[in-house]
Image (cartoon, rainbow, N blue to C red):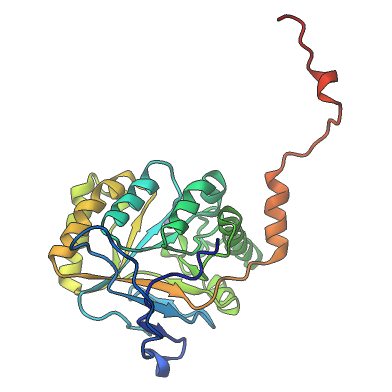
Length: 293
Ligand SMILES: [Zn+2]
């Protein structure tokens, strides 16, 4: 099954060209049926043309201001992780709403079945490097940055059995210039954020809800950065989604116009590394014998 075609209405499209920032609605398709009355839902879906690697999120990129007042984009980094990611998925499903996930490549290889649940639920899945390396550190070379990016995307593809979206988030929002340029050549959109929840250092769920709502009420809209890897975030989400609804906020889902094209050499290297080399070709019966029963 391909998760690429979704049964949601595409209500707007964003082009990499500022002049064509918002296109009229594409042909309307039936919306996903939601079982929950008065759920938060998804107010609109925007399709991103990632050609040239546009950047989003006003903390770093000011070019494309596509959210209207009271609109938010929910984003989750660092998964997939047992317990926390499924709890985040449940909270989102209970409100019939959608988010963008930025999994770590290694985590995707540890828990591919959880990442497949994320995609199956209709969320957008991008990538967040192979090992959460800081792509802006002094030790980072062009080759290492390329490896982190490509291996990360290939690991997500291997886990999903389908291509991820060409959406990328830099670990720690450290936008290394060489990696930025490389992502541009690969037609990958970079998502920073408008609003950091700082959930990874929150002492409890309530603090996350307060941080997000305080910033949101001040800014009025934005791409919200959270982590499905974090327990407190999973705990906070039902309350947070309820507060968004009560506050009149609307969720916008970001989707890509076309899937990411992984590089075959990275796909193949991952498959090769996943297999333990076979050095012993003896038959089972010659290795293991029942001597007592
Ligand atoms: Zn991260």
